[in-house]
Length: 382
Ligand code: SIN
Ligand code: CO
Image (tube, rainbow, N blue to C red; front, side, top):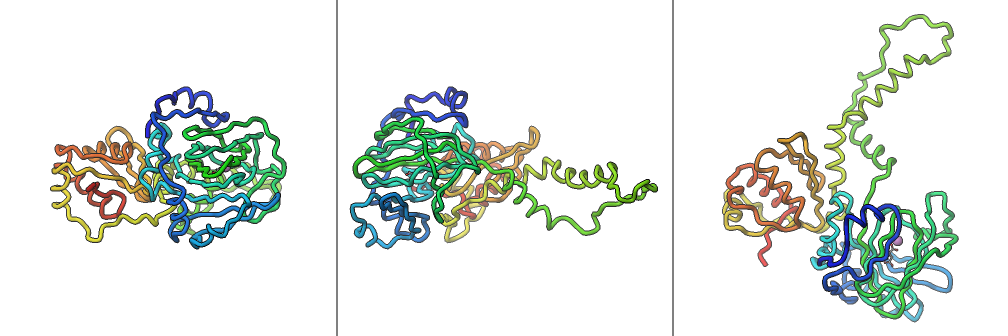
């Protein structure tokens, strides 16, 4: 999938994280990558996360998958929506939808959720904490957008869905196949299917909250701290009022925290492993038999194309000019020399052929072997 008519620099400058944008069919040639039946089939599988939302008068009801196949036959005339998470992990043609969005870094990309709605179906007015591109795959949907929301915005009491108590429409559009709507975090939105067979692909992004960062980093930092690493004051002098916690004491106590948080290298390494940890590790590509280094050398010399597991997350952080930390699926692989070029290529392309010259390097072959045996990479025999 490729864009024919979409200016990424202009989009980033004027819209990304700023305001919504309707993009009328920007694709070279739009083709719906998945049929409604295939989506229904995925919702019946137990390793796939799905939800079925049914509407009655003014209320929404959510059921969690896997759904029994017979459930679809029971759905009557009332509007309903089926939502399936991370479809890109299971369907290569849906994974291909992410490629034109690679102008946004890998670590910010989440996955592709696909929805199918019957006439009048939708999930109700809500807001998300993440940016999203809503691509209309099949049929038509009316999208309405509202105001900016935050955690103070009033919600309806509903155990499963975060629906807005009030939704004031600011703008609306009808999307047809190939059309795309970008919605920044916090903007209220509501999509309602017009007619049957409405499919929407949500290319979703991630942005960690401060709460998540501090909480998760502390979880890994705490076990490394010891009880003898303590406050000490060998320079204590008598103070006028014993009740005062002196400025010098506050300074020293505060430094005990900030020194830890200021360790940028430790933070970068942690963040790389944290952000590359897969959310859905069920797409298991580990080979039945581990491959040996010599065998890998032969396969690479024969220019067999390598594929990234679509559920795997690949990113890197540079450490100076001659070292790079590659992060794949929650692990850190320090790279030097030729392995740096390999790591850069693996992060940039979801499939690649290793240059036979490069595959003479022991570091390169060792890294590919490790990633292959872990199931993060596989060969494309097709
Ligand atoms: C949908 O596809 O129906 C919902 C997507 C969203 O609003 O985030
Ligand atoms: Co939404």
